[in-house]
Length: 176
Image 1 (cartoon, one colour):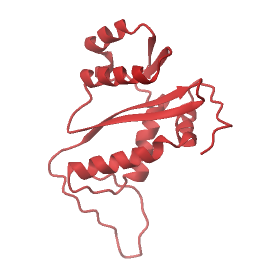
Image 2 (spheres, helix red, strand yellow):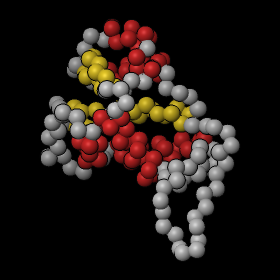
Image 3 (tube, one colour):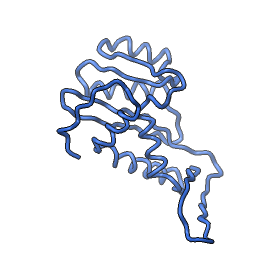
Image 4 (cartoon, helix red, strand yellow):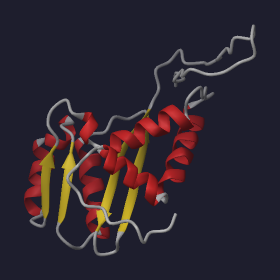
């Protein structure tokens, strides 16, 4: 609920003031997926926003199940080392999904995770200086910021390229 303060411009002598009502700590947690589909030559951006909840193992498994409905071929999942990703419950679920392969990013290497660039872009551009009045307003603004990015193939490719993952993206024929 507290605004992310960035450098900004203002008229000389008129310092910008951000007024917010963030006495109570409330937040919107997010789980996100950037997908590469070589068969369809398409990148995807999927996310789930959870107001006032943390991302836990049951939510991770629910997202994995939903993902399997969209991708029938074998899937490689690249994950950070969130505790929910490494839980026994998630490992047990993954053991039943033989066509899903999991790879973890190295510890303390958010620069390798393309989803981190999605979050950073949304926070520093779309939500910078945003002072929501309540959690619902924050949820709507976050969803709007992410939905604008979800269909932008070149932006998603930029997140993946910036992460410098060894993926070959042939996106030349894609239109914006």
